[in-house]
Length: 298
Length: 269
Image (cartoon, rainbow over all chains, first blue to last red; front, side):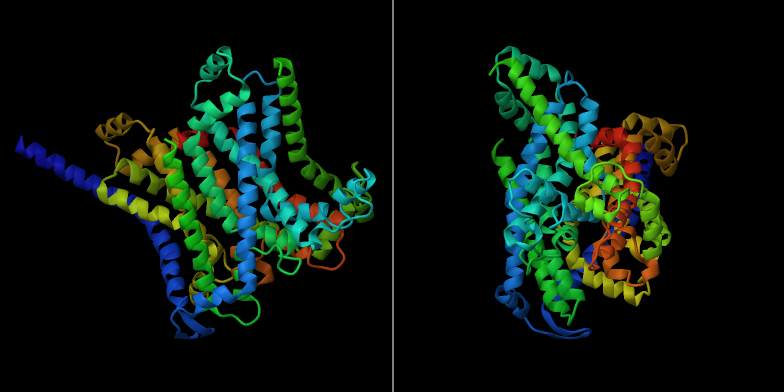
């Protein structure tokens, strides 16, 4: 008996060791290429200087952030995108998913593919498509003028407010289908007969949506909300390629501004590192708030 | 509201959503076959200038090289990322104990680190290691991601433990169990992971912008971004370039669409 037990123990130990070998490559990569550079950036954020000649400076980089009008503008822009775009997109994705979940919907596959199609485009590619569509001589202006809504072409990309709205429209277009797929996947785990029963009991589509679909999908809604928040606070490609951050930084995102500060003109890596940690803190705080809010409604 | 009117509204709503989703892409393809003036004039029918636009594009940019670069970077990244992350995700679930569970939670926090925070230190590390403008430089930061590890860990949860026990009795070693039992059963998870990883690698714009200063090493997204920086834009040629950039991700997307949905379903259970 005792011999058998110790044999089992050593077998467990062996498997445990094999487990460590299996996960080692993945963990080492993340340690060396995420955690190590992140700690390096944190240390750099307390230093100042040009290039490699850097000296300790305490919190001065973080204090400078509050005086940097463009960075504050970029924070405002990101939150503007976040507050307007993410809720619209997630609600739209939920509605579309619950419509497409109905097995009796005609042409379901075609609708689903069509709505998911924008996800197949590259980020830079769709940013350029929207830039062209909303240009002064673009198709959107052409249609609006033809319909008599506008007297003459309106340059969406050179006005501060409309430039931001174009970014929001583009983001909704690109990511709604993506989130919808997560919801559709989640709905697969719910028996469709629950809906049938609710319908027979006289529940309206809106009631079914609020009382069945949303509560059952809560964990997935939470996951998509966190992913979208994270993505929106790190927006880069759209700001660079759709509006070029303009007009006059009116639509610039935090990542875009940090990139410009880090690689264009005189670079101060201490200051750019401090700014990037501000994004990290925001992402972390928002993720915690969302998880807390998600728990409460249980 | 009657039942019939609800149904009508539903169809109208979803048809509009589908049309809005598809229109910019169809417009892009149509524009790629027309002259720039016709695109500006709002021509919505296919033209005959596709070849001409293609010749102009070839003259303006080394499309072939950029396309090859993008393919090379994306394929190698995808293969390595799937191997490394699936092995790690499998191990985190199958051989899990307290220490590994804690490590997994730590790994997940890496998801919150914004890439701009890593960009400068990575640039410095890679320039010291002479990895700027290289394939290795492009792929290294994307090989292991917490998201993929989490996805494979989640799907390993549904992998029957009895299969592992039986395979052990049959004398298969742990690596053989992984390659011969786990990989074939988890095809849809691998398909979903392939779609996500390939698209992320192909779309990656910030990182190559940081390390690929040499024109020979640049990618398709960088190329189409550069075309628009000129003063006069040839819309026909531009949209053809955008279209070419979209083809590989569209192919991957359509080829794996069905398994993608299944794989995601398995991961969110």
